[in-house]
Length: 60
Image (cartoon, rainbow, N blue to C red):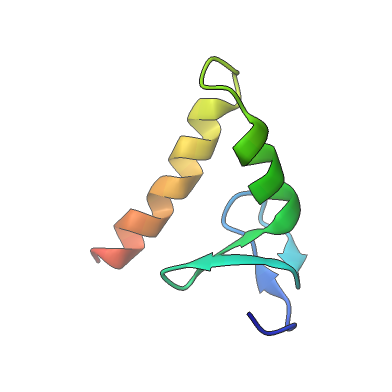
């Protein structure tokens, strides 16, 4: 990934470091938080909702 800033689909912040999945950007802090989040955590459904954007944009 290049070092230009991109908007994270999870937090909405502009960041330079993260991952891209089908042209959708997830910043490093959000990636780390998602990986550590248990399925029983109250934030888990939020992450699922945000990740769903990847599939919706891919199929649009």
